[in-house]
Amino acid sequence: MLVLDECYYPFDQEIVTQINTVFLALNQLSVGRKYFFITLYQNETWKDFLGDAENMDAVKSYVWANVKMAFDPPASSVLMDSLKRLIEKLEFRLMTQVVENRKAAETDNP
Image (cartoon, rainbow, N blue to C red; front, top):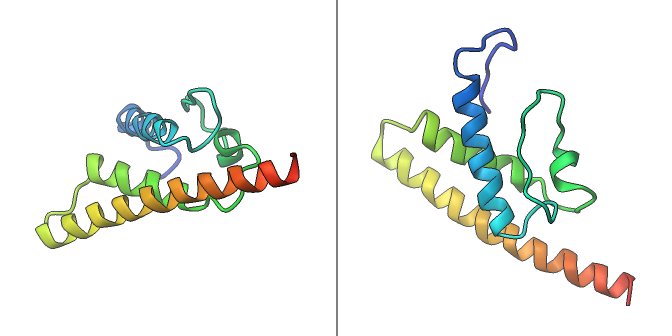
């Protein structure tokens, strides 16, 4: 993942903007809470975004891959294609997991 010293702030606004753009995309995929989520503070957690959703750890990889693509894209076209494929796979898997979570919730609360 991105390894930045907590005291190093020059790119904070750009990174936060990219993260919030990815949260918008996730919201449009029905991942996360029903309301639009944005991050503004360093003390927010993944639980703030995901709530009690299960099996959604791929969200972290999805956010990382998208922020990396926008903020620090690979120089190699092979690595760029690989990162694009990873993003596509994660989107599919996250959408599938959202459907599974909804089915489980319907079964638990008929």
